Amino acid sequence: MANTKEIKSRIHSVQDTMKITKAMHMISSSKLKKAKKEMKDSSEYFKTLQKSIAEIFQNVPDIENEYLGHKDVEDKKVGYLIVTADKGLAGGYNHNVIKLSQKELSKNPDATLLLVGQVGRSYFGKRNYTIDKFFRYTAQNPTIHKARVICEEIMLRYKENKLDEVYMIYTNEINGLEDEARIQKLLPLEKSDFVTEEADDNDWEMTYMPSAQDVLNSIVPNYVTGFVYGALVMSYACEQNDRMIAMDAATENAKEMLATLSVEYNRVRQAAITQEITEIIAGAKAQKRKKKADE
Image (cartoon, rainbow, N blue to C red; front, side, top):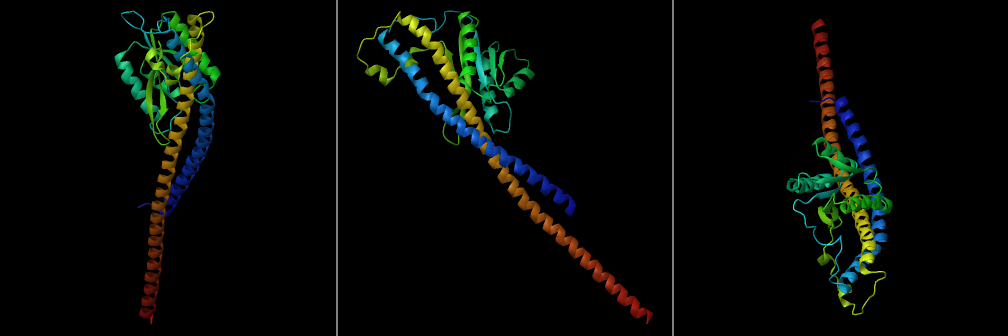
């Protein structure tokens, strides 16, 4: 059985850990509020771009474009933009993304990897995957500028035929307590993904200058940038939410450990006191017997 000094040391250690988990919970809570505000501020921009593309498809249904449909090639070159965190302690956040990524890479082992987040870089690097591009300092600070940089890299590879299909693997929120790893095709676009009620209700004829092709070529990069930015912010928000839940669970576990250690400490202390009293009584009785014997 551990002595009181050892138990005290363990109690202090658990208390120090609990202070850290509480602080991390508060920090993640603050970051989550910021991320949700950014999502709200950018959602209308993304919806407007999506609606504009849907209207082009409605008004020019037979339009052909390099960003549409499937490239007619036998061995398609596939790329994955994978979003993980820069650190752990966020429940199953990183694990779920990596698990989905591994599933996709088993289908396309020679795929091009574009990575956001130090966890993903470390994981795939240790397993000898070829990392084509790593976007540093993006997971913890997603901005529209960084999303545009990512989009430019994707567009360049797509136009140069280095990539025929590009997918993004990120984390999407289901509700306030749950999220899931999700895969979304970025390029090429599918017309079926842009059928909206707003577009279908429009009965006017629209003219595009200089042409629908040029307008679409201008909008698509902005649309992809908007989607990437939204997914980055959504992933960041999910990371903070998962970390809050994990730290809250860790704090509760620490409280339970403290309660158990407190009981154990009191039991050991009481046993020590009882032992001391027993020894004192035994010593007093021995002295009494010795005194009687001397008399």
